Length: 256
Image (cartoon, rainbow, N blue to C red; front, side, top):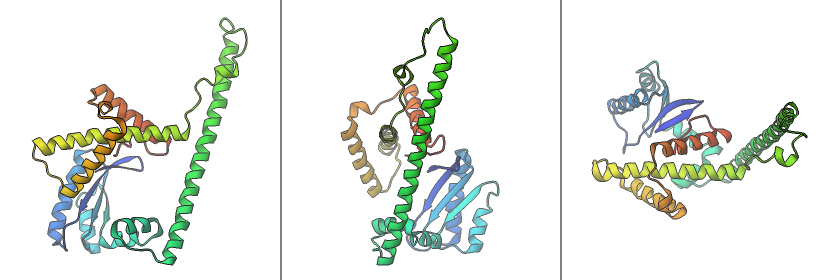
């Protein structure tokens, strides 16, 4: 996986074999995934595994390439994260571990805080849009005053606000559409490699991917899902990157 973290490109890798494996096997898998950092011009790797790793073993892995930042999510660290309020919902959804009464209270308190943070972010964005309109109004007013050959009077309010900023809902809906279409195109590329180049995918994961692809087809219509020219593909990714930036993501965040 190619990730974005603090504005930098990272690689995400997973290793979930059945049962505890020898450290030599874990190291081989990690070393293989480490190559992806260089291949993709990334600065770090997040390695997620269900394996137990002693402190000394984690130290060995992090020092294989001193110039690369490494975050290792080993068994104990994952368990620790899943036992925090932010991840109670994930734990219940995917591991079917019910929340105790105390955990439910903590979970909903944390959800409330997250909703407050989202509300604050939207309010800041709204204030920013209002400030933009005011600045835009003043800029046009100054231009109209300076250019007396073309304007006998200052521009009217209707002329000022022909380019009313989009609403948060419009931005979110457009972001979702571009995300769906980019994911679907990448899905088709993977489908071709599976059918013609012998690439393999976990059958359960592939079954879910096919179901998701059909939902995208039903939503937009297959005729509206490419194929795209190089220019159209670049525009599609550029629009997603820009809208995600507006919503608080880092530039070039194109993960699907």
